Image (cartoon, rainbow, N blue to C red; front, top):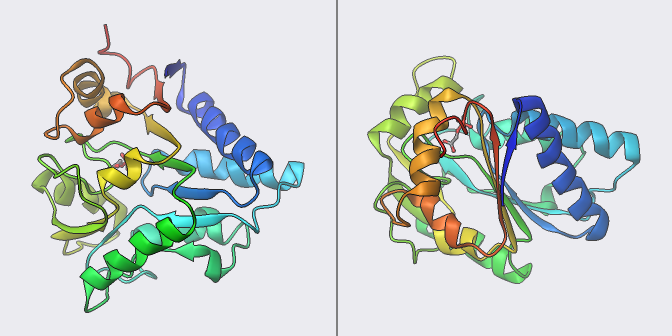
Length: 240
Ligand code: PGA
């Protein structure tokens, strides 16, 4: 389903409702929530609605989508820090419910295995909420990714390292990422992709109207049986 909203606020309210409804139906849902600017307001709305309606998130399992290798979790700009600020802290999520890549680990392969196992042990992802990179990436599944991979370490695309600076207050050394693989995202029972603003219009058109190809990882989602693509008017502006 492709849903167009007049603005970012409406898109975010819709995205938040999806998460709230899922947790109401399945209080032990397994959620994979992306970092990034686009889902920020969705998460604010999730927290507000959870508090208003008394939705219990204490049984929810959170799986990290990705992280910048070499960046401390406590560094503002890390994916963990973002989710800690937006979701884990405000909803008082206990540490044992959070499975997040430790991108400072010496053995990153072991980190990948740990997260692969956590997903498997919890019965797979119920919902993955992802953004889209300017280059079409999903998480750090960069153009050309092997779509059969589970969690893996990746050399980041130059678009990603350049755009990624926006999350950090001073220049961050970004070269590698650690990410769930497309297999895991495609195996989620539901995927929600959010895109907002004119900078995403061209890649949204390619991902939705172009060929399904690993050179545009987001296009792979078009083959998912239950994907919702939430766009504001600016991100949808180049669609036919
Ligand atoms: P953004 O990031 O929401 O900050 O634009 C999207 C992404 O790179 O996945």
